[in-house]
Image 1: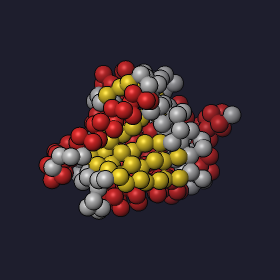
Image 2: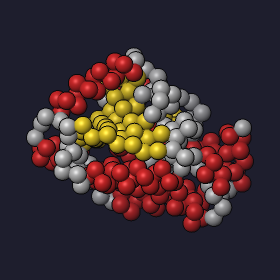
Image 3: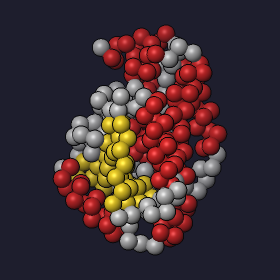
Image 4: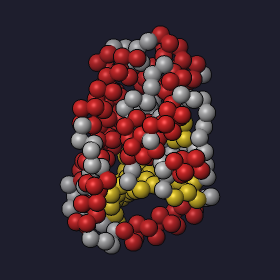
Length: 249
């Protein structure tokens, strides 16, 4: 279940992901998003990407709890968390700027997606939380992307207080969000204006700027998968299984 849809208008591609469980990600949807990002990276008619989710509720609830509960061995666990590594690396290596439309709350992997965007718009309802420690794992895969944006100390503040929401104002002040608006309508008006402006700039200059923004991250090609292996091992623990069941209920 769920979908990835892309609309290309002029030289801007808008990717919309959807899942009925608060826009969470099962492994199939992670792979579809990775494939779409890689395809658009090679599309010479596209210079800007917008990443958004459907609806007016949560932006992204992170990993699919149902799939986490179904993991029964280390290989499957490592493979599942590698799905988030694939998406973040695809965003990192994409030669086009990726603009995030973070209209609502983001949890776990959703925070990682927001952090991997090059420029992001949010609303006053776009609170964020890293709840992984509470279920016996940790935000290992997304940590490099989040720490790159907000720094290690704010990252640890979120990670080690896993039941507390951080406000969109906090996320803006720390650098996770670039611009924040009171309403989705205000966000979309500004997003339209911004994208029309930046998409008119020299594509080669934007591409070179993208490379500068992501300098020093080539080691993520191995690091994120090493982190996925840690989560793949921890998700098998009785602590995590019990915690997931409680969260689901």
